[in-house]
Image 1 (cartoon, rainbow, N blue to C red):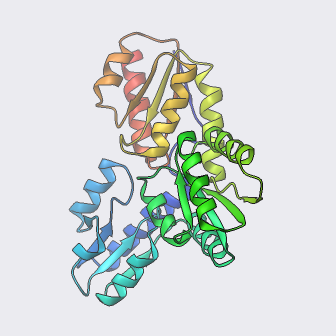
Image 2 (image 1 turned 180 degrees about the horizontal axis):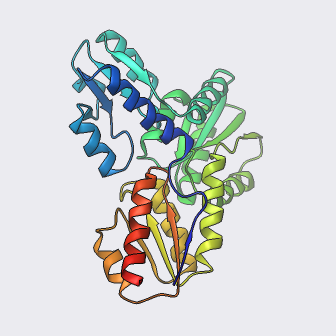
Length: 289
């Protein structure tokens, strides 16, 4: 049995930075420390942080006055910062630098009277944060079906220019398809900024290539992680035996390994710690051995 592990599997820079700095905060302060939303989409890490005193709440209004709040890598909308100041909450901002760059781009485009089309998942926390920086003259496009509505809103805005930006973890293939669709349907100046994180693009490409070579493809990551689900979708297109698991105890892994595959590929989402990946590998080796 051959196990091939993706070189890009596991923590991206933004997540690694957020996790490391959160643990640094815990060394100095365990009192009144909150995280606005799950720090990462990984149950093990969230549970461990809770044991150490980091409480997770989803809204800044739920966090007590005079507390300390961690802004996770996804970032937040501008109003969250304003509300934190009003409540005398100390902000520990761990927004991924690449997300911050998108916020800056959005603000700049809005100030220069561009209609912003944000290609992203509508309910993703990063998208919600970025939309706050885009202003009222903007639309979120998740699927091709959203393009017509966005174009109609652009026309109603009476603006002359369009700016296109993207969620950092969006599908590269889907982004390109949507952009081409927009270009076909409007005749105006369009500024296109492919703000998909390079690490995301490389990971998706490696997943594409790896899933074509193996009999079983295993994707490790949180079931509510958008980038992990995207990797799984890529695998399903190329490998009929593809599974998405959170850890070594997942029933899908236990059942899959019973089939004794000769080649197994492993890829992990950006919020999956190395420890979880290694545990899955050891489990497979023990069963296969």
